[in-house]
Length: 249
Image (cartoon, rainbow, N blue to C red; front, side, top):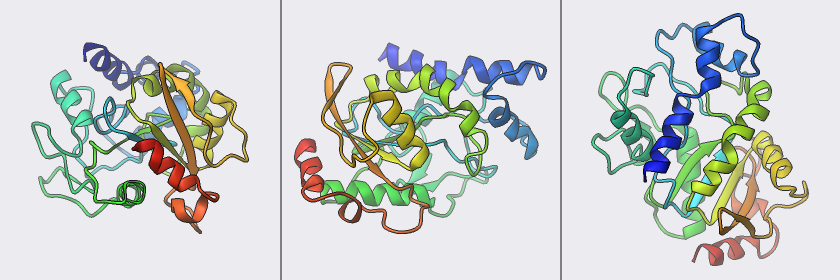
C-alpha cells in the first residue's frame, strides 16, 4: 500500500511539471501541456492525474491519451493534503471519505452539486458492462489511467509530452494495476502501447503479456469521441470478445 501511495504522489507532483511551473525559461517536452492551464486562466494548477479508481484491484483498466480539464469540477491542486489526494484518485467513483462523483459518470462540482454525465466516463462504463455482461461498479470493476497525466483539452501538448511521460510512468502503472484486461482507447494511446510492448498494429487483442509477474491482455478500441463503431462487438474480430470475457473470469 505504501508503495502505491508513494507512486501516486510521485505522479501528482511530477518533477517535469514542477520544473515547467517554476522556471519558464527551461525547455521541456511537457512545457506546452503544463502551460495550457495558465493559457485558459486557471489560478491554481490542477495536478497530473495518476489514475482514477482502485487500480490495484480493478480487473479492467481503461488507458487513454490524457485527462480532459474542467474549471467547474472539484479536482486536486498542489495545495491539497496527501490524504485528500489519495482519497480522491483511489475512490473517485465511490467508497472514499467524500462522494467525488455519482454513478461513475457525474463529477462533484465546485458549487457542491453534481454535473452532467461526462461522455467519456459514460462510454467506458458501457464498455465495462459489455465485457462483464452485467451492471458494473465504477472504480471497483474498472479503473482509468492515461499515457500522459497532465490535463488539457483536445490533446493539446500530448504529442510533445508523450515520450517523456510514457517512459517515466506507464510501465510502473501497469505493474501496479491488478487488471487482467487493459482496454486501450484511441489512436495515440494505441501507438504508445504498441511501441512499448512491440504489438503489431493489426492486432485488436494481444497475446497475454507478462507485466509485473501477471499476464495481461491488451485490446484496442477507438476513442469514445470517435465517429463510427466503438463497441467490442463491432470492433473486435471473431471470438475475441468472448476470449476477453473468459480471461476476466
